[in-house]
Image (cartoon, rainbow over all chains, first blue to last red; front, top):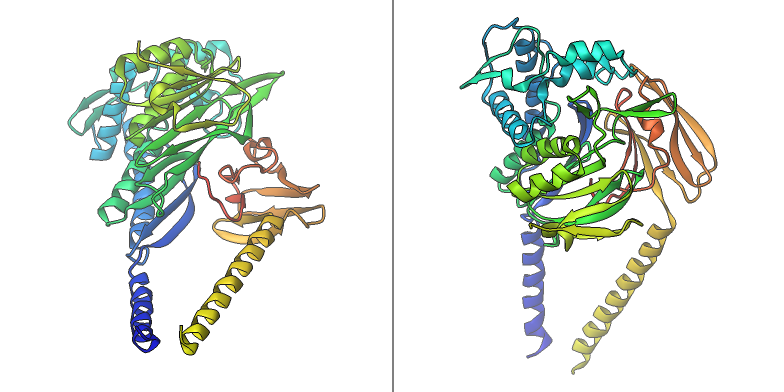
Length: 339
Length: 119
């Protein structure tokens, strides 16, 4: 075959390739501040960024629904209803139902009615301090998530109680962002909501996403990387929001047993699973449960994988994720299995 | 192989080698620079190359707070912040691509310019 025949074919192929490239998914990304955190969204799509705009709008709407401090939000109305039944959105009812479910599954370790105690520590305003023991004892008398009434989308809360959905809202929000991306036709997306990561599909090149896991003993560094696709990776750690007073460290994940920061052997809990909501709620619940009960919880219920770091420097990884985790820390990895 | 075809093949080969050399040079250029962005509410205020930046501090004002960002010895960190919780100051030095230093009150972020890993 002479070059005179090859050349037109090559030109045609080049034109076709160039033309085809225009319909390939493009990267659209944004970062924003919402829900008291820094969020990064990235999606590969063919929609001129429409799904990214829709996701940002959904985040703003959910913040206005769940925020405990925004007047007129579902949670503000429930907290200020003085015991009267309050009609809430499907989203809020779903989160309260999930909070009750995980509360039950964790022996009450997750309790969304701890909010007044969190306020007493100043974690809600940033002006943190150790409250008086008598203050904590008085407030703990009003903490009991089993007293939250939920009938359809109607919530009834005793007048002296207050709730917040901080342990679930970001996980549900990442579920919703990923749903919007998927329904728009995207096959590849990654979101980080204050370090809570959720992925749609794999990277555009087909490889898995690499998600860094924070080293709780050195929070500006990663202790390792987990490779995932179509999953959420959500961590609760004692390094996220804390303060020190008289040489003692106090963090924002509280134990309703005494109203103090949960101190049951764990400094970091990472949950990996299909649902951001489930992972978010479980990461808080298992942190409070502590090492032994967290392992027992996983062995009993399953449906998720986890990485636990204990205060004495052990790294426990469930068998379903051990092969996908690259340990960069000095801690030897101990694999835990269903026994 | 006839002459015109040989000429096209030679030209294609040169283009291939040339682009390979360009990419390789770009790779080494990218390795030399350690680019960090200081971003406030989505707007990039400064892009700093930690590999060559002189030691200095930058005070950044916001509507509700302020920050003092410091570059020292090829590292960058939030030296001071006007908010009560000091979360960004406690973050220490920027080390990982997936762990930006974030000041929520001032909507200020210090991050590596090209992030490959997420978290």
